[in-house]
Length: 137
Image 1 (tube, rainbow, N blue to C red):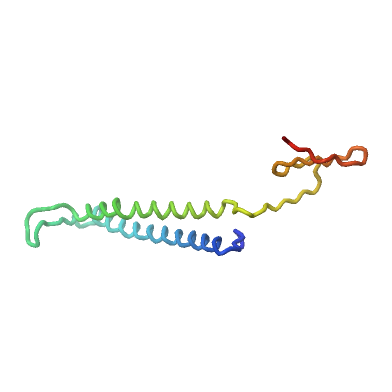
Image 2: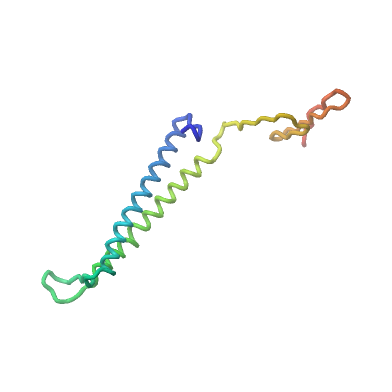
C-alpha cells in the first residue's frame, strides 16, 4: 500500500482486488497442472488408455477417458485462466494510472525555462530582472 500511496478506501480496495486476482490466477494454474497430470497419465502411463463404455456392462466403446480431461481443460480451465489473467492485468494497470486530483511531485533545482501545464515561465535574468510569464496562446 505504501508503494502505490494508497490513502483512500478505493485505492486500498483496488490493491485488494489485484491481490485476489493474482491468487485466483495461481489457483487456476494449479488446477490446470493437476489436470495435466491426469492427461499425461492417461496418454503416457505404462497401462493402456482407459476406455469409456456406453453402459455399465456394455461392450461398445464411447471413447477414451483422457478425451474428457482434454475437453474440460479446453472448455473450463483455459477460459477461466484467461479471465483471471485479464482481471489481474486490468487491476495492475489501474494501479499504475495516475489518480485524479493527485498532483505530481516536482523538484526543480535550477532552470532557465520551465513549462507547467499551459503556462510558460521564463526565469532567465536580464539586467537583474526576471521576465514576466508569457501567455502561450
